[in-house]
Length: 543
Ligand code: G6Q
Image 1 (tube, rainbow, N blue to C red):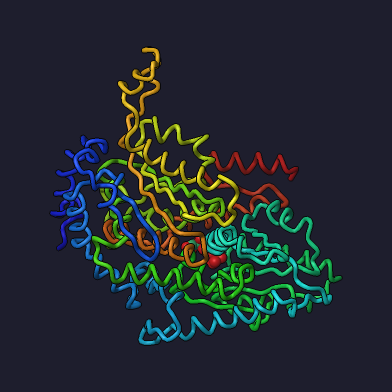
Image 2: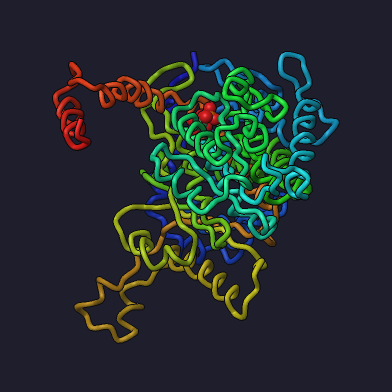
């Protein structure tokens, strides 16, 4: 029997090593090695990673790599690419890598090559996108489509929103894009407030086509559109398309399967922005840019699959996350893109990382006795600097940071970009090296203020540099984090591809909905708090 992770030789060795490591300061590590800032760097798929400001030595890296070997990471990677059903609790293969495999590649599920199907859907999406973008696709009343509203939630929303914002520079400006996810009616009402239904296309994006929020919004959208067309249901065909794996439910809703773009059960929701779920992205940026994004994803996939672990960027980043979560007690991880277009990237990553690795049992069902995913969070720079960075610099918690910067701006404007990048470098520097009491005193600071102005430093960070935010660069970046998450899960022996934790609340809500809607006072048998809240709400709404 395999010993528990915490009893394994690699884990134990790392634990012993980390005790000494925790007392080492980055100032000393840099002082001891003039080459450190160049040695602990890596270039892969056009991304430059500087991890020299991590609290590591050669020995730490050796032990982390041993942990990856012991975890069977190589075999896990091979199993994913081979289409094995590594999502064991749902008995599914995990093949988002097939979504971006080039035409002609061969990736099999149960002996069937899925790549031709992937490209067949991409081709249909492209033909549709071209028709809408060129104005050949007309609304029911003969108007050109000017507004695209994606209705979806979770994995069917966060990727599309993030990618739309990230690639806005490349988008067709004559089309407006809106995203509706929340079951709060305000989300839908505000999204369509100023839109003309005659020139609006809805994409109902739902893998299952049963999700409460999405179906509720889709029905409201249908009502809203049909009100414009005096109830003429034939208008649905021109104003609604679906992205789903559930053809039956799609046609029941009234969307012809001709207007449905499919995907497969081996694509997890949070790994689906590069499937047909990315239809809004393709409508925005066009098929060529979408394919360039897929090529970027693929380049990182190939790097992850083939690079030795010591030079494997997602592997190193994943292992560093494990190091801080389990050996430095870091509770969170900040992702700080210095690129305005990536403003929704942290929100996207929250689902990717936390829904994947927020797990408390191993693949075998045993309760873990170590921490799994940290909380991921962040905001685009430099805004965060004027807000929560205070805590990162001088608070009591260790928060590893990923800084993401680009060599060129898509909107070069005077000195802006140099100032932006100066801030990236300055923040990493301040976090790592801080400012000692002697340095503070030397500036003439009154003694009483010295402790307040000391920066302890020794706060770790990665700096990721890319050339410019292209569709390909976005693909590379997303794949980098996907595979970092995969690496973490392999070490933690958890299933990164299920999400049972979102089920309970959904089931309970289904029980409560009729109690809120009932005409007469329902008999309630919940706990006393839930009972009282339901009664109070019924009073508030005047039931
Ligand atoms: C993602 C999750 C979840 C899912 C949504 C929407 O990995 O499974 O966020 O994407 O619940 O599901 P549907 O696409 O089925 O509506």
